[in-house]
Length: 72
Image (cartoon, rainbow, N blue to C red; front, side, top):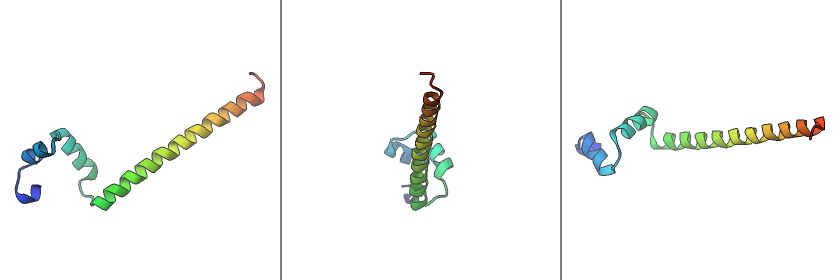
């Protein structure tokens, strides 16, 4: 839309996003191509999933240590 000569404000209004959202997006994805942005999102999702797995494992370890102590 910006390539057609519309100003940023008109494009933001047409897309129904705030100027703050636009600037936050530009700061994060500014020079990336669409494929790179998709890959970044996939990596962020995978990273979150792996962090959840590690957290679950830590809980399992704590539970097993507690049971091994016999203090239940």
